[in-house]
Amino acid sequence: MKYFLDSAKIDEIKYAYNTFGIDGVTTNPKHVMLSGKPFLTVVRELADWVKEEGVEGWEKFPISVEINPHLEKAEEMIAAAREIAAVSPNFVIKIPCTIGGIEAARTLEKEGIRTNLTLVFSDAQAIIAAKNKSLFVSPFIGWKEDNGEDCRDYIANVVKIYKNYGWYGKTEIICAAVRTAKQIVDCAVAGADIVTAGLAVYETSFKHPYTNQGIGIFCDAWDNTRHE
Image 1 (cartoon, one colour):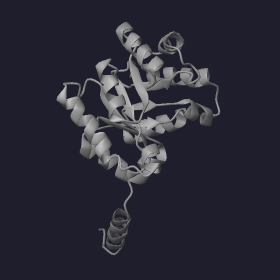
Image 2 (cartoon, rainbow, N blue to C red):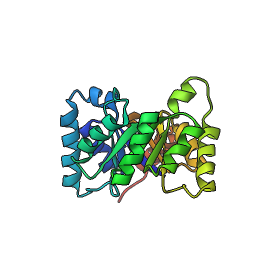
Image 3 (spheres, rainbow, N blue to C red):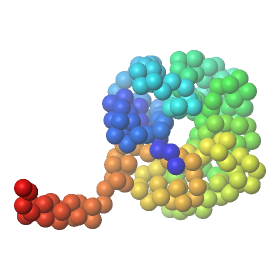
């Protein structure tokens, strides 16, 4: 399973890439706002960084960039997507799962501009992404579980549907809005291709109290052993 970082902060992205070996990045308007930088500045920083790292191309390191969420008509979405995609070959365009978004994603994929159908909250919505050959589909986890839904069956069903029709691995399933280590594991057990989460979620998932306890025991043993 691939790990994508949910962030628009270039320092976080560099750290996660060099430390954890993240496989890609997902951004959205809120992430850009939290970076404290203008949208185009963030986009250019990301484009420059993949060049520096030698990972140009969405096949090597996909970066999902979301279009203006105010746009509703397909032609407006397509125009915005073309402008963003022209900045870097790494950019995959995030399109909302609306009627206009579905039409836009279908057209963009035919043009060779890869898309990530986002804000997906049902199995039925996930089907249309694969039918239209989007590179990614982003079923959201955290938001649904915040409202009392258990998402294990949700993701398992998407995986099963994709396998039923030969879509599995062609439209990759990104479990989005992942907020806990348990959600990461649930998505991995279900067979999702990717999870995307914030840096703090990954850092927490790598920690365990018994690991710290074990280090303490071994440090004590080391300190009480002669080293000659």
